[in-house]
Length: 457
Image (cartoon, rainbow, N blue to C red):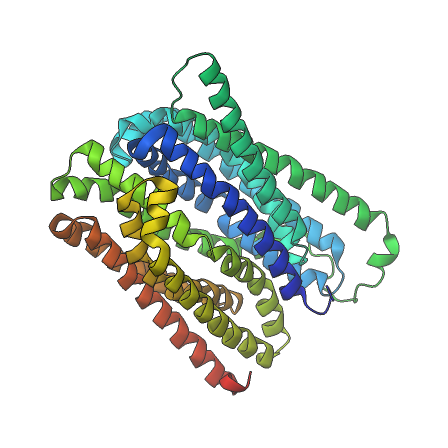
């Protein structure tokens, strides 16, 4: 069953783990909001753009490149080249990650004051910079395991990171409470670093076990199909990886820069609307630290599908199996639309109650009601983006993401000063609709070009 349905089994593993991880993380955020308040959550969320940018620069494109090339190599049982691919991508990403860590640690005060517009984030940045190399290690290794369709390892690293992070923060908080010390939001960032360390250890153990399994069984290597590209040099592997990873990383860096501008200027524009700095950070904390995590909770399912669709669609496209590609597009749209409508109905019926019960916040409940309409568009766009990337349409997905972000930025700069945070919520809905419609149009166009019957898939 595992060999016949890699998408089904892999999605099940990642979904169960993702839901469990989000379940833990969700109540973790409730704990943080009660300990540190809405303003503390706002400050904590402000460091996310820096972390996202560093991930884009160091490993995001390389993880996808490793996954894609490992998937093509394992189809010929070329395990030696797969490990060469992983090792090469790992070294390239680690060099970038150490440079990124040193820069953020050294210039944290400048980044906090000039880039994030909040000086109180400087000590958090120095702490979070230590997690960048560790995140790079397990991201590269996860890319390898995604490529060979063994999702148990990425799932385990994700779960271990979450459990250790939450457990360490709660332990630190308990020690502070016993010693009558006042906890600060820095403790949450320390927990994040500890969690990344745990995830790294699990992934390293897994890849060592995999290498022993492969290289201690030489007969498996003899089944590889003889071809001139069987064992390419490290130079060729580097060139192949960079050819795919550099454009992907550049695209994601640009996207994350725009997302950073968006995140940083939401509190700033709320102050232009008339809120104080503390109130603006509080509203931002409620939105990003309370309401959005609840809305994104079901996306553990679509995220799992998206991660696995890329290597599967890429392999089907390389083999000329257009029917499999069309089938993946059709099923993605159908099931994501169904999931989206169910989630919208659920959040509309229970949004206000959930805001009061979970966060003791009427504002959080109001945000949940408005954001509920985004669910169908969000889930469809995420899976179709992965399919289009697997088909090599990275330029299209990049353009669609940029266009979607520009729509949101227009609402940030022009709607928030007039209508407050509601203006931003409308912008989120509008931008997601734009991206979803564009991705769907491209997917249907691909089906027509290949001659596949969409609804017969």
